Image (cartoon, rainbow, N blue to C red; front, side, top):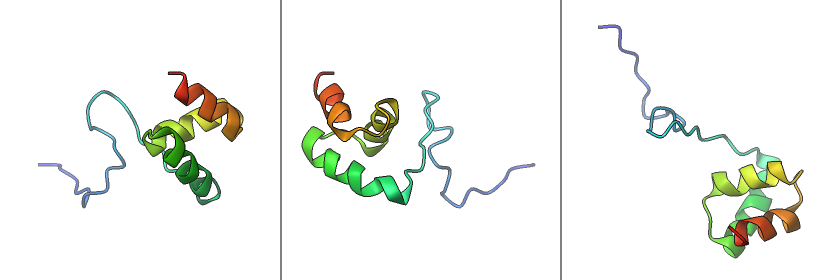
Length: 67
């Protein structure tokens, strides 16, 4: 019936709420993992905040902690 197989790799699309999980580039993954130990937030939120802060980890941590 016109269904396509995802093989379990939907990248978060269709998981409700309209949120889309963005793949974190390898160059940013180490920074995100380091910040995750500090702020205890999901990686996608940390990466989104880093992008908002022009990839400034200090500013991103400050904003995440003050939420």
